[in-house]
Image (cartoon, rainbow, N blue to C red; front, top):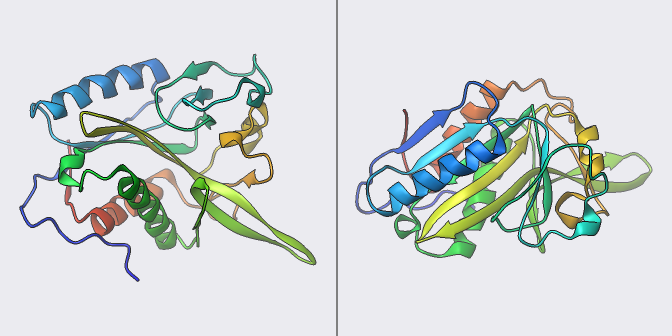
Length: 230
């Protein structure tokens, strides 16, 4: 079954793509998103996908438990208004802040999150990775063989969104080449029974530019929207 959404019956402007050329601090990212979301909601700006990397940091979503922050002084910790628990951002991880007007996407938050999962699954398939959903666990998972031992599941991409006046912000995080040891400071997304992985950890030599190209092509496939670089 295709993950693609039917194309909108009314032609919508292309979604603007912006790719940050240098790491963005988390407070700067939040302030920029807040301003853009306000402008989108009043019709003063187009929808946007903002591709960034961050310096090493942890974020605490609205459901974060203090006991899941295992190393309080390892990296800066930022409280954030997105859903979810603790997560890590850092170099080698592609974060895409997704600022879309959900009035153009069915005004169904649950369906929107499924679309984000489909977007990541389609992009990862383009890169040769079979990623899967799991009930009760938002994000994308890869089944890892361990020979005679039972297989394990590792998380390769996270999703955390917030909606204001039907405009989305925050978004997705795909592990391309991050330092996976940095996850040791938290219980990622409150899930201790499973690990984390990356494209590099899976043995792939995917560059950030290649990951971006797969994400952009998959976005058009799944959301039925064209994109244009700012």
